[in-house]
Amino acid sequence: MSPSRNLVDEFKRQLAEKFEIEDNGPISSFLGLKVTRNRTARTLELSQKTYIETLVKEFLHGESVNSKPTPLEPNQRLEPNQDPADEKLRTEYQQLVGSLMWLAMRTRMDIAYHVSILSRFLQNPSKSHWGAAKRVLRYLHSTKHFVITYSSRKATENQPELGLQAFSDASFAMVQSKHSQSGFVCFAAGGPISWYSSKQPIITLSSTEAEYVGLVTAARSVLSISNLLIELSYHRNDRIPFRIYSDNINALNAADNSGAIRSIKHLELRWRWLQQETAANRIKLEYVSGQEHPADGLTKSLTKPKHEQFVKLLGFRT
Image (tube, rainbow, N blue to C red; front, side):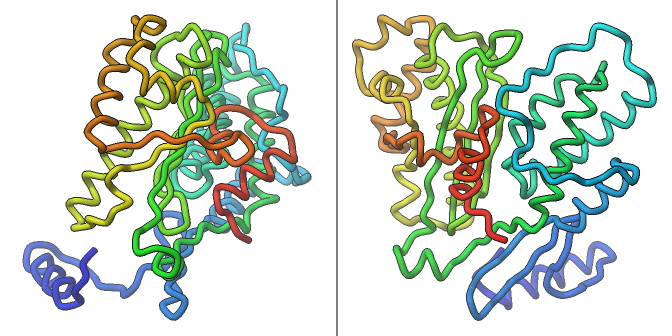
């Protein structure tokens, strides 16, 4: 990445002196990822339609590809398998979940939560786990045309910055271990650039505590992104403070209220660190309603209407 074509050419020349390289021109695909640039419109699009179609042929084995409106049913509970898994089933399940994980990490953050859940049964999957994984694949097939679009023109017209903003969410004690689930997504230039859905490392005692732990992890993530932008010589106003949005007012108040330490004293180090970063104006915590929260679907399975809203908030286009 460079603002100068001459610098890019010089860098490639120096690489060619040390290594055997081949210049194939502007990137169009990479490991199942399709890249489409429109220099006139100043947009860049990412999609994985072909990769999804390959997975359907490989894992559905000619089965009917019935479209699914959501990755998993909203109230579906996947329980540990009490019997030893069939070896063939285990191998296929691990291969499919690994492929789904690749999609979730590259362009399909709408399945990140579901892949996080499926990955907990890799060692001993059951037929119900296998069926759930194939349902996610059927959902992907019905939404294979989804595209992420980044636009420098949009950022330039509306504001001089990239439009950096991050969203943090958490679902309290959602899994068998009673650990809560954190969800995070960060946007720039009109599209998501970083996200995760993961089980929290500690057990919390309330939804406010779960949200607070999620905010701390989100703050660490955005500071890493901020440091990367510094390396890329990006010094616009939307980087400092870096805004993080949450729909939990109590968690937001705890970050600003010195008296809150009495109720979350067992989280004191996290509480003091987050206060330090907000006081230094490196991050700013703000409220967003649950209906406008794009990290909501990163912590739980949603009903069809809510999932459609979730996908819309993530910025997917077809």
